[in-house]
Image (cartoon, rainbow, N blue to C red; front, side, top):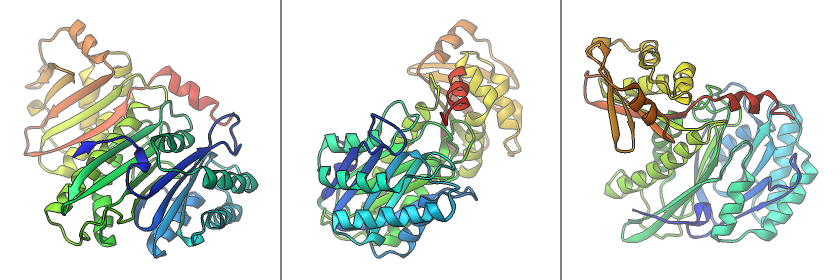
Length: 407
């Protein structure tokens, strides 16, 4: 597997564009397009929040019922959530406008929205933006960059990844982009993410791969514990690599899932590290658990703990907060058999074991916790299972950003 440039345009047959439509923001790109010149097999996962945005409802219907997907239209600034019939009408008009501009069926158009909840989208601006996107679309690194920038809200950087690998003697390419910085607490999932691939694959098999990959990537991150109304992950595969169609879980399928895991984990970590107001990516790796699910629960509990996140921000080696978060996670274990370590780069420090604090240097611990990427390693000594979760520290800036988000 080789990493490459190009994001959602890296795979054959996929085009992208980003443009300024004035949906809510001024003087910045706020609409993006992904387009495939060939029909795509599509899979997706969506928010578990009972309150679902109109685009989520629309996309679920397309993924489940449409014969194929051809395009994704995304706007930032306004979420089109809690908008009633007008919100669904907006989706219908968006799809119809994209269908006309791209000469594709409206029912093959997927939609994403992100931004303020409760505001109505000015559909005329969306329709005008689609015309601009259709005219500007191209297969290039720059086009993928423009699309990735256009879906940002409070994100400070665009988030992209792409890889190339071999399937059945053919070269296959996969690329993706995502956005997410606040209201991040995946329960599939909390953000917008779009992955394109030129692989030929059976739809049922693709759905299985997507579901399992999301569980160990996007569903293992958290910024603030809030599950969004607009969570959407979409995977489009147009078959233009012309590999033998993947229909079973063989060695080629495992190669595909490894690539998918790399893309999704890379994008997920980019989101966690770019959490609103964050100064550090905060990773918790749990090893020695009885089951995979137990490891997931424990690692997520630590990275979701506000007190632990605050300690990371303050570079404070307060291991009691980590143990506390493990203790209320809902897993029964013996705390005297747990070992805790701080890791960053080549540095590794044993901070807790045998039921008590280890003899460590507070100054050295502070130095480790001051790095831009910090890991807590938890060894449960209960089995062979492990899992990793990603979050970020909790800073003063997070409150400032969210105190006046609507304005």
